Amino acid sequence: MHTQVKQLVSRCMVCDRVRASFNAPTPELHPLPIMGLGYRWSLDFAGPLPLTARHHRYVLVMVEHFSKWIELVALPYKAKADGLAERMVQTVKRALRKYGLQKGHLGDWDIQLPWLAMGY
Image (cartoon, helix red, strand yellow):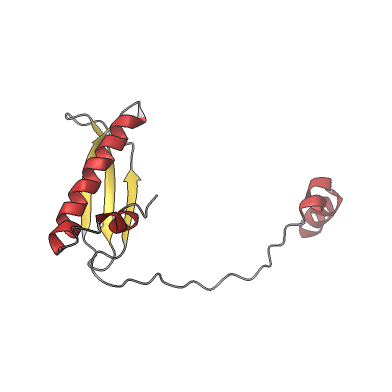
């Protein structure tokens, strides 16, 4: 069977043009640096889940890498992106208040936004 597949691929014009190599070396993985509490956040959406009585269908999952602290926010389904965007703005404001602004970072909250938006 190996010989038959090899012959078929050798005669395939598409395969000949692509010439994909599956022997490429796998690059070495390196961990991302974590410089301390609040330095690196990951964000992700989970869902769609079964609809709840409060009309929630998704979960926004936020993980702070240093402490492994998680924040979970139930989100409703909105046909328009505006509802989801508004909820994300509320969530970012809450995270900034809770983890950034309380540490005395009143004048540099804009620098912290990429950390909160890293999952995008």
